[in-house]
Length: 196
Image (cartoon, rainbow, N blue to C red; front, side, top):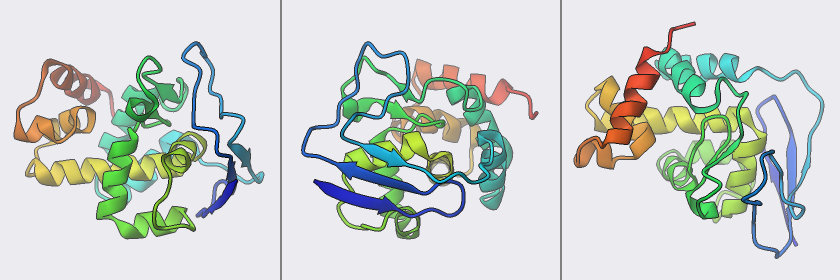
């Protein structure tokens, strides 16, 4: 059994205990379920709404409006399912209010080591299960990871907002190989959301 205490910066303190059972999520489940082998403990504290967090964290990086729009698209402002793509293998699913894939979060953790230090007491070899649990249980982590990922995509896209939004959905291939139909549809949908 491994235990990791995830660092917090305000909203929720989380302790996760992992057994040797592999991480799994029922493909038939319509509800958010943390697997039995991940035990989450929280402390009751004032919790910012996902919209407030997206605005606040986004503003710190100069992208507050676009992060609110992405939040609206990904989870209807935090009101939708927190595990997307349940028909896909665990590693290819999307998690949390910003519907991040683990591979995208790992890219953020690699590029921004202070981000990793902020949220995990174990900075090296953070297991996928810990990243997934953190995405599902901590909106601040999910939104900050998404904001850093988006700003990195925007840098790669030479500040082109449309291309960066498409790349948030499609990955860097949208920038280097061209935006696919799903990427175009996603970017158009995000950019049409009102600022409110």
